[in-house]
Image 1 (spheres, helix red, strand yellow):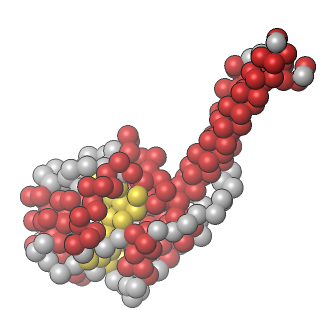
Image 2: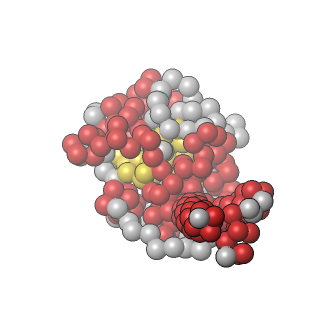
Amino acid sequence: MKLLEKLQSIDRRIIYLILALSIILPLLFPIGFPVDTTKNTQDVYDQVNALAPGSVVLLSYDWDAASAPELLPQAEALTKHILDRKLKLVAVALWNQGATFADRVHNAIAPEVGAVYGQDYVNLGYRPGGSVVLNSLARDIHVTFPEDVALTKTASIPMMKEIKSIDDIDLVICLSAGDPGLRTYIEQIGAQYPVTISGGVTAVSVPGMLPYLQSGDLVGLLAGMSGAAQYENLVDRPGLGLGGMDAQSISHLVIIAFIIIGNIAFLAGGRKKK
């Protein structure tokens, strides 16, 4: 009974500390709880996996720092898979912070797989304009993105000499936190050109993408941090996605445990008074 009384009067700072550790430690050291892969996540994986080495993937970074916890791990897992498969990766951005995140992902993943900038992947940077940019990109990538993020002429980059328009792209993947983004690609590229479009969005944006999945205009979709965790599991690279889901699961268990203990202590205390 004394133990229950002590638990009922525990310093709230200790509770906050335990909760903080339950979030921080899994992020630093992912446990890797089992993750069920949804059909939409599997479809994205299968699209990448079906491409022959040397095929070209356009990966669009259409998000900012506010959406990074969900979309950054998606980008890392996708980039790992794409470069592991010896595919050519062309990164672009319709949001002004996108090019910076592309560099961050490339710097993290390229050394792991031995990819070489300009031969295996390239970051063409950010261009404002949304649908106007995509219409131009479809016709001539070199005109739309005359330089890469480091101001190197696109035409002088080895891998870009054979990649000139949407006809040279085998798969488009857009990671999007809003507009312009995935919907823009579907309407401006998917509706006019015979190229497959896959994507990833924040969890809150998933319902708006369901009609495109049902119609076949969108093939596969990574949904928030959960989608990132599933993809990390598929490519066998635990990262922020699995770590985030581990942290979420453990912190929820800790909160439930405190609620149960608190109620037991409260009820026991009430009986003692009677």
